[in-house]
Length: 238
Image (cartoon, rainbow, N blue to C red):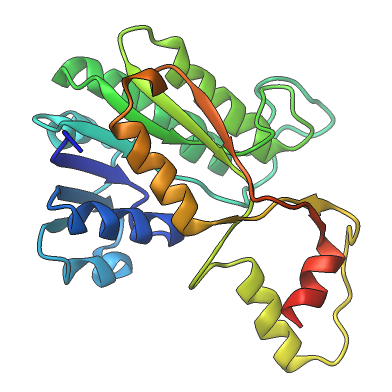
């Protein structure tokens, strides 16, 4: 791994803590901005990791954070948002929280990379993301990845994972907790399909991309080897 100095946005989350730990294990210096430092306290014990409490969309903050880095990683994502415009669906129809996390932050990153002269960017989107996707979440993710890949001066790589599982995930572990509490679990959209991917495999794919010049400008769907319905996954958990 040639890069040794990283800025990781979203580093305090589930995927982030695994990626940051892997980078630190390789001797890299990693800075993780967080709106509340308390939420990233589990990273402070890592010897080459610095947690900075800040708002990355505040004027000038990203310019300062990115300066001097070898690469930037964007893992920021939210699963829920206040609703977008009612009774209207189009390329910009998504809630304000999706807009901030999935569109405004990627755009601000692109701008800050230009100011700071940093050209390597890894960006995590979601499988199925597209500006005209059926959900607000996927539409906003689609716009964000389009912004990142549209900039010819950036050496960007986009990863589009399916549901990511592993220690401390918020998907399978949620059903495990519910199964301990309730004898019956009612499911909405029980036949919805997923292709879960292990968090360690996602991290390894991202690390491999850092060493692969051919990954520049590419997007990769990251999925596990088998599709499951939601009902099948819950049965496995139970």
